[in-house]
Length: 296
Image (cartoon, rainbow, N blue to C red; front, side, top):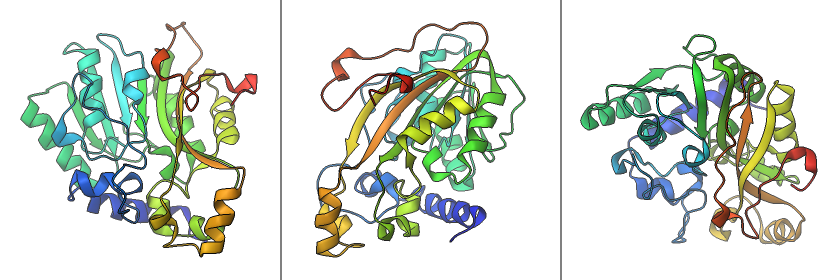
């Protein structure tokens, strides 16, 4: 089994490659780095183009949700983006927090940091800063952030507990996060789990949803809420790279699934306002609930 450091190096190398390839290549694969599908649709990403602050140059098609849309960011807030990539979530957050606020993007891939800084300079944003560092040990002081966001990143980190604990550290009392991530219900076939490419592409590094939500609560957060949930379907031409036809049929028949969820949680302290939830997105495949209610 790969060590934590080996897996992090795999992800770092993959995302250095992704930083220099087109959005079309990224969007046609699992979080940008998995095997490319010949299907037309995107596997993970949601469309950002309707959001204020969106920057096409900063949109690499790597996300699995729209955490900044649900993050309840107020004018003047300090926002931290975990795994900030080319900066798209930071620029959307900057629109919400305004010029009087501050946005800090953290990424451990030098190529992504360089790309994000170039995008910020081109846009003339002087209150958006990008720092190279590990999100398990962020290069920021304690209790500095009002809001933390992240888009399809924690699933790539072997030490998810470390990330959640450090997120708790950097948030102010009463601060909150909104994180989009990939989770599982049921076990993936080991042939998929063991592929380093697919790990860097989001799926094999994902936790069970119940464990993921439970870990957030164990890290000290309260009011844990699933703001959005959608099913992720892997096309057969991706599965065929790793599984036999018999295994694909077995995989499809299991009572299991791969999901993108957006989760809100608060650090205890001064109460914050309720998270924004779009009722139009509460369809049969998108639900809002508390993990304690058992409805997820």
